[in-house]
Length: 597
Ligand SMILES: Cc1cc2nc3c(=O)[nH]c(=O)nc-3n(C[C@H](O)[C@H](O)[C@H](O)COP(=O)(O)OP(=O)(O)OC[C@H]3O[C@@H](n4cnc5c(N)ncnc54)[C@H](O)[C@@H]3O)c2cc1C
Image (cartoon, rainbow, N blue to C red; front, top):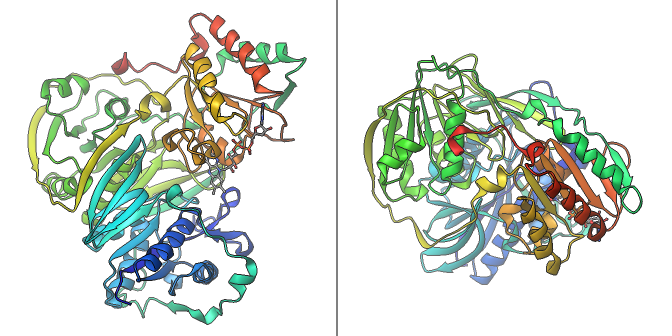
């Protein structure tokens, strides 16, 4: 066949609610509970379709334990032409960069010229989403994600990509690495019989020697130090909405004093290093100010020089936005991730930092991942809490796998790159006086990833940091979402949704809350017509109070404070009326950030 050669990189994951780790932080895999990562399933399905429609070939590869052969057989059953398992005991516990390096070795040792490499947007067990961008950097290819539409035009791709805060269209030069979004296609699900019909020897196995690794064990730049299974400490109260609604309102009145669960509230007492930098996401000015304020929230006397890298042209405005920082570096020219990376890497080589922080948005994720490769730095993603006690080690906490697990992760390199997850409450900063120095760096266009349609904005800061959030579930019909929106507006609440609603295209994916969506930490979260699945509740674990309006309740530990059984058409209006009656909404305010008011 003369058509394109497509490679799909896939991962075997534990089913979302069952992820476990051994004491050394290595994931425990129960073979019967493993599955093809849902985003990778889309990547394989789409890769096979694309290869067929262009008379090309689609190969699949996975780095993993021997049990990962199962997902490769499944990929062959979906229609992939060949499958490779990269497995070696020395790969156990590999972090994202080692995984990308193993994949790079596979591609280079086989001297295969792939036109397109597809990955899933991220793996649902660890939620890092870094491997695709890191592989692209190792292969010196452009990267784009998360693609929800893809059109092959001569030597390039036209993509519509999902950002955290909307959608944008880009043209990407081939060869390239592309991460796919959930909605790129309907995922294929072969039957157990179809998978069993694929002979095991059709999966080709390669170990460290086959891949020409010169070291005994490729070295991870990050470690998982500890896993904590948290008690969610929710109240699990269930009331019947038809005749006990007064109990629900009394409960809400009682919740005024509740604060956000303390283990998720970030607090760094000081930045103990000499040099730290924050990289602004050009589309998220409020989020940037919030996180810079967080970095400055420690002891005023600390001697850390904090530098902010930004793309704004209004230098006076930037200076005002970031009081307390020591240096401002303007990145002038292109603000495409692919163009920014080499310029920022050069700057970091000339001005070594012990810590680089960026928001865990698609922008921060791609740049952080690629800088990790170029500067050999450990990248810690989606942290909800940062701890810096033993330099140069940077440590933090993130949610993993199941709803009740958090992992303590560390970087082991001279510079740690940290991506902070939006939607995590932070403390107000204690401002220190400063007159920042200003530098400008020119960012030339490389022309590998070109914006064809600007992003359609949906600022996530307002959503992620709203004091009240209503979560719309499948119990709300398409034509009723506007009604819920109006009720939400009347109490200044933001609207989020479950995956079912985002899947149906009824609300933007950037509003999906949960394990494959985003995290929010409102004072009050009200699920409306939602089942309250663990996968959804994983995104509201930082909420002070969780209420769910549903027709039926789970028994036992629901992960919810108050379940109101009944039709939401009847139960929501009185609750909204009550919230409106709390004139100043005092109960529903997060600690204020002085930079934002
Ligand atoms: C790997 C993976 C990742 C996932 N990630 C996410 C994620 O990030 N976020 C997410 O949300 N989901 C996620 N899911 C899906 C999740 O498991 C659930 O399927 C989903 O959250 C259910 O959505 P729902 O509650 O809206 O719908 P349903 O499960 O269909 O529940 C609808 C609820 O509405 C109630 N209802 C119906 N009519 C009314 C009415 N008139 N009044 C009151 N109640 C009513 C019903 O009683 C029911 O409880 C994921 C799943 C997988 C496998």
